[in-house]
Length: 194
Ligand SMILES: O=C(CO)[C@@H](O)[C@H](O)[C@H](O)[C@H](O)COP(=O)(O)O
Ligand SMILES: [Zn+2]
Image 1 (spheres, rainbow, N blue to C red):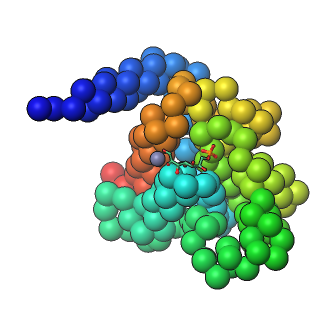
Image 2: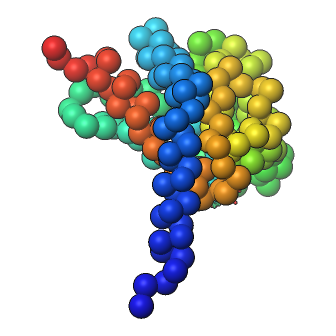
């Protein structure tokens, strides 16, 4: 017997993907995200990602597509997810509070023209909001990837990729879909031989 959730959840995934496919302004903002990453890499800047839980995994996954490889062999790109040093995370959470983990690192690493990609399905995670504020102080460009209404992040990002759903897993799946496409555009534009 096939559990009914299997078909139901696949159907809800397809529904959100169909909405995405038809929402031209959102697809334009996806192109703007690709353009922002391209500009950063073309001018010797870097792209940093942050998020919590599944969005931390997505941050790390997308950073690795860029710093490692996506479809083909080519030089590495400077991209990293901010949560990957557990010694740093445990120390700073313990000493300064969990809300400070990304902001503190951005004050050390961020330079003008770098890009922060901030992933939060609610748009309201405190450490991500503080990261955005710190990125702004450093003169970075901020791309937000959120759910439908964007939460508090809606007003704080240069480019907002707000997936038309309120369901966290479906939002995350679409972040990865669009994030993968952005990585492909970046890789092709920078390295594909005619
Ligand atoms: O992956 C999931 C749920 O699909 C969870 O781990 C989820 O990412 C966590 O609850 C996060 O703390 C949610 O934070 P956010 O997306 O609202 O910023
Ligand atoms: Zn998840």
